[in-house]
Image 1 (spheres, helix red, strand yellow):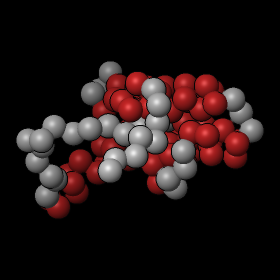
Image 2 (cartoon, one colour):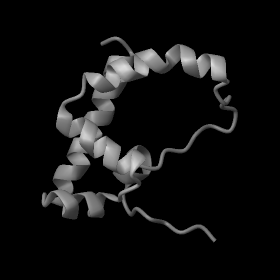
Image 3 (cartoon, one colour):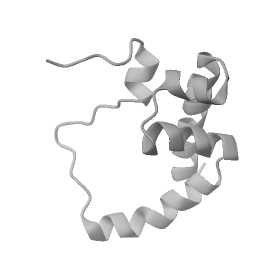
Image 4 (cartoon, rainbow, N blue to C red):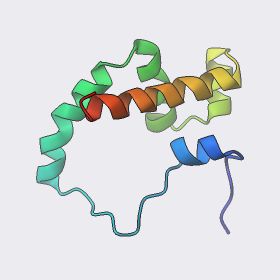
Length: 95
């Protein structure tokens, strides 16, 4: 049985992305090659953007938990995560 943790389209898209079935896993050599680019892109984010991504993706906090922890509205957390992900995408694409 699959439990739906998020109830809106935003969270499904940005928090729990689905990967295509034909995606190739990164081998070690490829991962090491792209690591500097990813680290550079992350370093270009603001401290707040880095922190909310850290809480969501590395610490495993839900948006509700981040909202409570930071004492900010739920929608603010959603917007920060969305903005952070869009900025990361732009930085990684060289824009």
